[in-house]
Length: 127
Image (cartoon, rainbow, N blue to C red; front, side, top):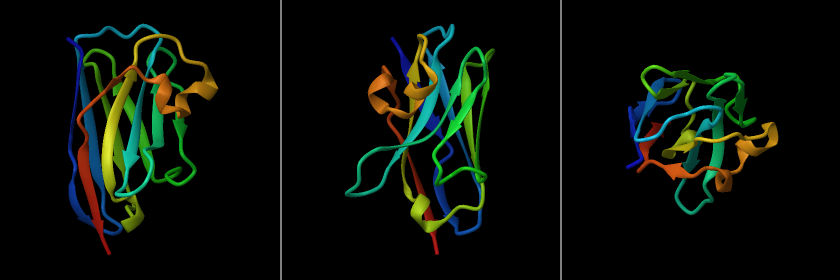
């Protein structure tokens, strides 16, 4: 059974940092991808960042570029999202998503390309 478990969310003041983690079990990555998406109340779920499992290419939404960093540990089947200089508009539920098979560069940004999703972790940034 595939399981993605996110952790690390919480309440932080604007300008602060949080580190989210996503632990995957029940699947083996070969040349797939792991991504982070977020959903604020009343809004669509949007792409935040993604990383290729075999090539370590990284992809970021323009809104988080330069502030967020995605990384992974293959041996631990874990992906992290380091979030710095947080803003109130970063407040959302953050979801980890995984795709165990090949994904083209342009495909990383679309939630429909990911097969498995975690339950989400709440990030709240106060002003």
